[in-house]
Length: 394
Image 1 (cartoon, helix red, strand yellow):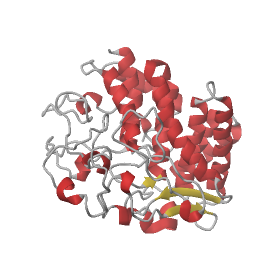
Image 2 (cartoon, helix red, strand yellow):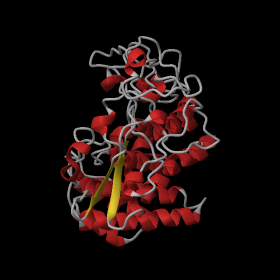
Image 3 (cartoon, rainbow, N blue to C red):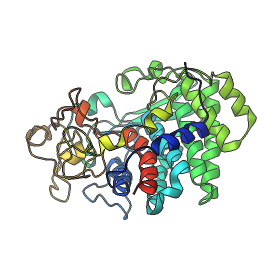
Image 4 (cartoon, rainbow, N blue to C red):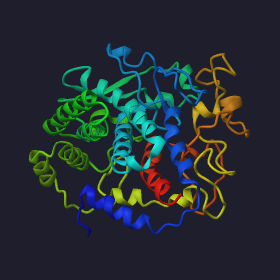
């Protein structure tokens, strides 16, 4: 049984162990592309600085059904749904990486901040739009997953989901508080007003998470399960939120909450759902992902000569608005696009897919979503190690 470690210890350990890895790939290129990927996941009105030009505005009516503005944020993976639980985790990880390795990012630091802010602008809306509610998702996954259409063409109902005192969600609220608190430190020296807003909102969301305890899976049911159930319960997200608020404020009240929630528990799994063992993500096999594997396949799209060409991703696999201005409806994308053997027409640069099968094989099939689908939280966990490698080994 390993005892829980502080943030400082986790990163110190990662630095020591990472130093033994031999440099092979171009980590600076991989870092830049891993951050660029998030532009392909953007929802809302895109800025003029958008580099992945095959994407266009989408989800501009998000929140309309509940009379609030919930535009922005990220689509979590290859679909067109905004799940706040993994989005908040993604934001926390990006912020953590930027705090620890920002000075090593060089010209990619502003891009990392932009990726974080695209999420936090949306999370702020979700946390402040309606008193007593935290909006936690937009889009019905059960309907969306029956369609294969570009986010720019969405014609499915954009259902809005929320948690409240009567329908609690301490897990998603705790993660949201962690994301906002971590991001507040990212912007502390470059935008004090925005940083203060993030921290102020993080405090309120965490108070909400503590006061109305319960799992959002129980409150929302099929809207989030089996997609992003809170399998580990909500205590680890409360612990995670308290830890980040303590780091952001240095207030002992958050430290005491952190300890009371069981900060010394066994860390066994770390992901969008379970936060106990972050070091295991940070020490992942980066070189393997970038092509140092038996089939010499880079699992980052657009990196190296051999990478996934048929990823399970609606926007990437369907022609862009510029090349195909006619709308592609819910059912129209399956034939001829989804079932096509041709490579995706749009390269989602930097996307890291699920990876190989148990035999180190990768069939590169669009329908094989467990191996060919990218996700924001996969990339977010890679940014920190790539920044370290880029500065140290390249």
